[in-house]
Image: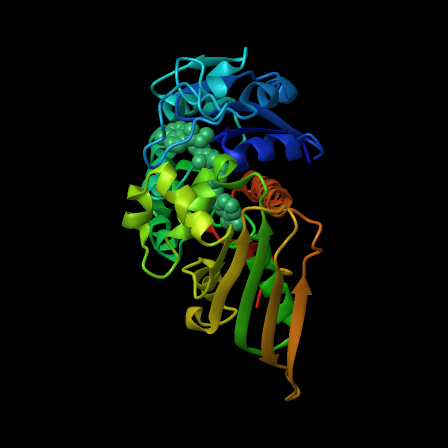
Length: 350
Ligand SMILES: NC(=O)c1ccc[n+]([C@@H]2O[C@H](COP(=O)([O-])OP(=O)(O)OC[C@H]3O[C@@H](n4cnc5c(N)ncnc54)[C@H](O)[C@@H]3O)[C@@H](O)[C@H]2O)c1
């Protein structure tokens, strides 16, 4: 495959690690990165080490009421002109970070969208903006919620018209584990049930994973997107303390369900997703497994199980697959295959 240039929208917990993981991937050159307040572009290739060093403990976070004290209390700089990616010598402060990347997109093969998605139509609207600029290339997101997939489908014609290949829900779950379920289903002619159970240990806590943690809180009993969105950082820290740092989730609205249905593997209602998030330890609180139960052509009922090694971090399991799906999407895009694809559709067909 020829060299692929790519941009990262959102250099938070996920986006920063995507840049880091890309250094170990053949043929991927990061040429642009932005966050809420800054943008860095170098078509010859960004200096990832410098950018990561400049944003270490310095993520331009959002959601809730981030205390704007210049980081004095926490040692985390999130205010002032040089907050976030703008602190990098390669970056400029900007009020229009996404438009600035779109302006450069003629020379960008693929864009990884690592933005928060508490406003559900945010990522679909970002995709529309690329299409409006006649972008021809790949967009990949790591969104989680089922309902967003339909919003992208509604825009499929627009994306196709522009020459965009969009892979949605291409993180860990949905993403990696959805693809694993599609592969595990290949033994069967009928799938009865898919159960995804994940374990994530993030010692770096809420501070370094704000979008991820805030969006997950919306899945807890008694919370929804609106309440999670309205919480201050202090309220989130209190909630985490009340649970001794361990949050357990059941029946999550994760798009694995609609993405497996879309690929013809099973009905969305036959998919369940849950998991445990430990914000005090890097060790996983539970092993991540995907179990797929179904019936073979010759009448046997069985369960195929896919299990992740406990040593693999959330960042490894989101960003490795996200960049892997990005590379697959670039192959499709270069072959003239445009539109919206889920991770299971890039696996063997069912
Ligand atoms: N599918 C999966 O397995 C999976 C796993 C983890 C996280 N995620 C998702 O990844 C996303 C990012 O999570 P995170 O923990 O990195 O969040 P984060 O809060 O750490 O980072 C978000 C980044 O987006 C930037 N941003 C926000 N609004 C912006 C705007 N309008 N323009 C430009 N930049 C903007 C912020 O400045 C920040 O750099 C979340 O939606 C989360 O749910 C998915």
